[in-house]
Image: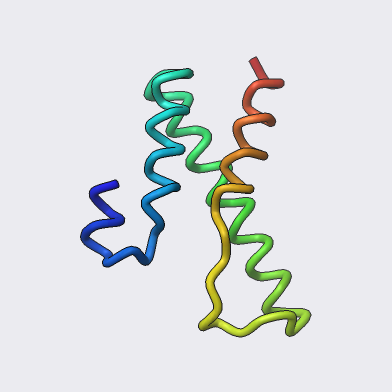
Length: 78
């Protein structure tokens, strides 16, 4: 949530809240793994959209779906 404040909401406050909730539920190291997995998923989706010209580089993209997918994926790994 501090990064959201520093970046003037470039990263949403809701994403910070989601990571606080997942951190309380899973712990610090697993929460970091969820962050890394969700960053990879979002980057691949963003590259896919840019390559197929579905969007331009100025558009925003919701990050919470990638957090949710990575949380589910990480739950099945355990």
